[in-house]
Image 1: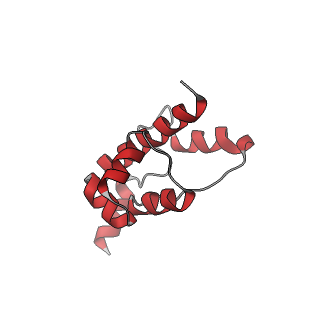
Image 2: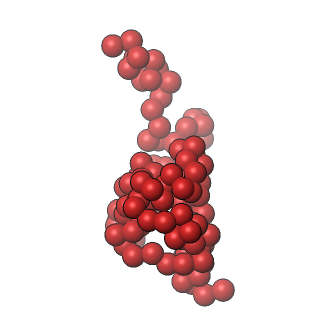
Image 3: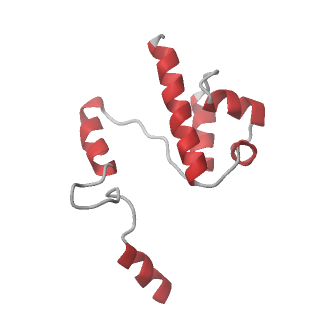
Amino acid sequence: MSSESAALLDIGRLLKQARLAASLTQEQVADLAGISRPRYRDIETGASAARATTLINITRALGLELMLIPQAMVPAVRSLLQPHADDDLPAFAPQPEERDRGSEV
């Protein structure tokens, strides 16, 4: 498998995970991103590449932001996204007490 094919599969896997986490169908994401469902399916399955603008629209439809970061910063960003040994939530997730206080206001 070529590195391009592997990258397409990785992107598709991440998009599918985000879509399922958001409880959205492929049709809903496609509508929000302004593309057809078959086109979205091909991107999510890694069968087809997408232009950068299409990926931006898809990620925003999923409540995400596509960003370019320096390769040297990848380990630091990954560590921010991974749960800590003493915590089972990613660093960016709201803590339960933060959610509770937000609903009291």
